[in-house]
Image 1 (cartoon, rainbow, N blue to C red):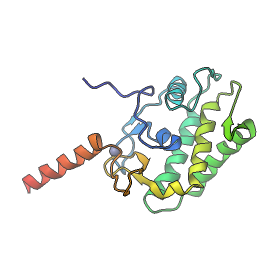
Image 2 (image 1 turned 30 degrees about the vertical axis):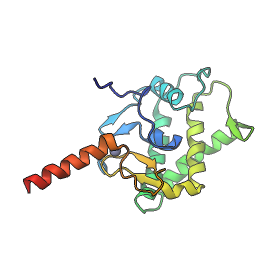
Image 3 (image 1 turned 120 degrees about the vertical axis):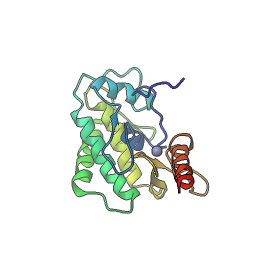
Image 4 (image 1 turned 90 degrees about the vertical axis):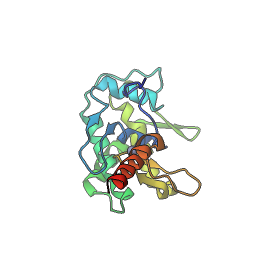
Length: 186
Ligand SMILES: [Zn+2]
């Protein structure tokens, strides 16, 4: 039996919080997303807990989803461009940096980690924006890739940099099956 994907259980295959956040939508590579797992502010909070961006004890004030969707689109535009050899669009980078500025202003550092307290409704977004900017400034960025089959982004941690799909079991198998069928037909 296959469990339906949801905000609470969606796979975290991005190897980075910011990329996992982008991967809360699904769809074929290069096409508009088919499915969005963040359909309410409650989904955002559930996902942030699942991904470790928000402590279980944190109870942010209820907000709407628009700022989260905006941040997600900005992070996608920046990293999808980089993953495919382009330059990050200025507007997307500026949108990311605005949330990052809020995060820095509202946060403090403890033992080298950002911490936020309080019930601000944007709190789930702050660790994500910080993760995205950290990644942009990191040499881990060399490992950034987009799945060969779907729109998901990930850092390739394989020793020889040979990972091509978000997951071998999902997109890897689909791609291989499709090629196999095409070869048989041909
Ligand atoms: Zn994929």
